[in-house]
Length: 174
Image (cartoon, rainbow, N blue to C red; front, top):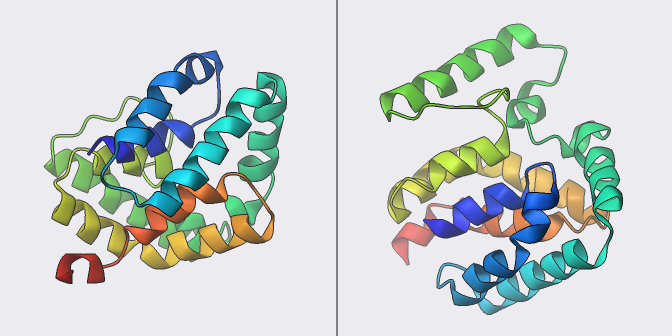
């Protein structure tokens, strides 16, 4: 689904290509039936933020948010195992990599398979119910990450809250 691809792009390190594509991203967000009105408003504010702040400032904000603050790491196994328990984290990363292979996904990135934008890229290739089940497996981590970003008043809390809201099996029952 396209919304996961958009969220993946928004959570990557910001560059000029992102800024250049903000009008197209805004059009996708405005036309999306996969997010509700409140989420759309939050995402529009986030897009406004990206378009109104100089790129270098956005890049500094991104690094300070995700690279320098462990509680905000986009490497999801960090939230489960931390840096200290690599022996537990390693098998989880291998399992994710194997799952990508099973689905025929070739990753063309230097990132570990638990990197949220990469997971969202994968999720964008699933149908809605598969995506919900997949995200529900990481729902607790997404909730923690969203709460941490919200407490820090980070603009990145908006896209994370959308992902978190879709990471529940109760969506399938509705």
